[in-house]
Every structure is written in structure tokens, then in C-alpha cells.
Picture: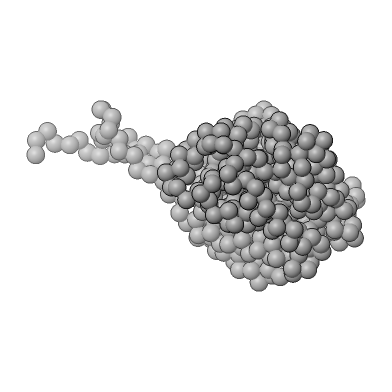
Length: 484
């Protein structure tokens, strides 16, 4: 496949390509251009005219394009879902669902494009301003650069690109080099839906080189990144040189607190779906630390082990597969190393723990020392460490003892306890009685601490991707009469 620059499908100016392979067995799928900095500069230059076309496009036309895009994506859910499973490694049932969610996000942002409201400001609240009238409007920033990760490339692309276009910006996208193909197919659909020339462009190639170029270029007004904390820090450093907007959704080490009064079967199922199976464990908001109240610790471990052993690991294109391969061998080796290191520290592997190529068995680990990296670093794979606690204060302290603060989960049937814990947790979102791996596009999503800043959601992202302008009409009202 080729990349999209200035509404034309092009090869790299160097003539070089990068292969995209199935992470399960290494078989070749397709290739994409390895873009040069010259290609990137051409793309940003084209975006300058693209942003003017988008800013001039009425809201109802922007809405119509995004809604048409959603319909066209829905028409190809099976085809797109299979391609995404092949290049990404997630089970096909999950990739179809990801494509379906992406279409829904495009449609929602299409609707929201018509609801970028301003305000009328009561100037008579300030003495001496009684005759003035003021209002605010929201206008596009200009060019939005979207840097997309490998784990949920189509869904996260929709959150960024659809939002940017709905707000009237031009968007330039850098997809993950490991799995760019489905996103490029969606870009084809967006072109077919009627976007203006250079309104949306996609460049493929070396992630570090292109990402740093986009973060530092003065003609890009906002960079939105979902990725590692290290990537977010580097993007922020480069963007600061031009005082550009930065939106960061970064790493997580989400805690799940299970109280003794909880439904343990539901809590165990939440760990399975929120860590071991969904996304092959490669989710920023996946359950990564499980704290269980001591009286029910053994029972919970038994339930979780039983459920983990039943998961099918294998070919991601088979309908009954629960866990597919990690994105590449380096990722799988990192997870295996984390498991072996935890064992060396005294932890006990109850289930799984083995690697076969890029596949990691769903792994449940107990007796994890509190200082273990398994509890303090983000392990991106199907590994569930469980730790006992004796009281709620200890559980909250354990959960907050992290550089990250994306999401957390609480399992209890005591609503007062749930509220108390939720208020005390240092995270961007709290889920009660289900997994941390929850993201609904109408709910603000994002973290605190090293998990980034800013919020993504249908109602929130448009505010991130526009600026507010105040307009004051001086002495617009006649002088009020002295007497009535």
C-alpha cells in the first residue's frame, strides 16, 4: 500500500519500503513506504492549504463527511476486521469490534461537529460595562498531528482524526509501522467520503524520525499522542520550542481493588477480560495490579486460575481464539523477562508463564514482592499479579504507589466504601465493579501523573482541538434610562 500525501497515494521519495507481517507466524502481508523527511515536509506544506479548506467548510458539511465515513466503515467491518487481526495479532472477534467502535466514533464526531457552541457573557456583572455585549466562538487550531499506537490503531485513530476534522482542522496521521494497513484502508474510505484536498494525510515510516519531525514543526498547532510515557516526554520537549498544544494519553499501571464483600466470580472475569484476553494484554488501561482483601485472597486466586486456564491461545483469525500473539518478538521477550524476574524475586507463577514465539500464555502470579518491577513498571502483555491487603487504607496506598495514574477499579457491594476509595485514588478514572479496561467515547478518558494530560471524549476532544475567541461589542446597547 502507498501513503496519502496531498490527496495522492504515493511511494517514498527514497523508493524504500517496510514490510508488514503477521505477528503470529511472520508471514508477509503487504508493504508500506518508508517516508523521508522530505516527504514529511511536503505533507505539512500541503496541510497548510488543507487547513484553510477545512476551516471554510460549514459544520453541516463536515458532519456529513464524517457520517458518510462511518457508514462506509460499517459496510466493510468484516474485511477491515480481518486485515486488522492479521497485522495486529488481536483475535478477530475483537478487531471486528474495534472497527465497529471506530465507525461509531466517526458518526458521533460528525454529530458533534454541529454542536461547537460558544457563550454570551453577561458584561453587566462588571461595573462600567453595562452597555457592552460579549460572546465567544470556537475556531479550529489549524493542523493536528495524530501519532497512533499499535494496540488499538483504528479506534484511537478515530478518536484523534475524526475529532480534528469535526473541529475544522486539517489532520496529518502517523500510523504504527507494525500495523498501518487497516488505518490506510480507512483513510481510503475517508477520501471516498468527500474530504477536501489535503484535509487528511497519512505518512508511514520510522516512528521516531517522523514523530520528532511532527512534534517540532512550527506549522503544526497540536500533537496528540497515545503511546509510552517516554514518547510523551520527548514530544512535549520538542513541542515546547514552538509553544504548540500537546495532548498526551500515555502509560498506565492500573490497579484493581477487590474487597471481601465483592462478587469474586465477576471480579475474576473482569481480570480475564480486562487483562489476560482483551488486546492480548496490550492495553494502557488494562488491569495490571490486582489487590485482594486477605480473607478472600485464596478463593479469588483459585477462581482466576480456573478462568485463565480455559483461555484459548492461538491463531487470531479463528473465531474461538481468546489470546493471540503480541505485536512482535521484542514485546514478547520483554514480558517473558518480567515474569522470570518476578520469579527470581520470590513470586509464584500459578498459571501460564511461558512464551512460544510471540505468544505469551495467560499468566497469574502470586506472592509478588511489593518492590517488584512487575508492580511498578507497565508490563504490556497477559500477566496478572495478585497481592493481598488487610484494610482499605493499605489498598489505597498500594494503588497510589505508582508513577502512573490512568484508571483504577473497585469491587465492593458497599456504595459508601466505593465512593470513599474512588475519591482517594490518584487516577483519571475509576470503574466500580468492573475492569479498568473500559473506554466509552462519551466519557472523558485520560490520566494524571506520568499517564499524561488532557481528556479524549466526544464532548471533550473538540475543545482540545479548538481555541476560544472572545468578541466584544463595545457600547452595543443604548444607555439605560435613569428612571423607569
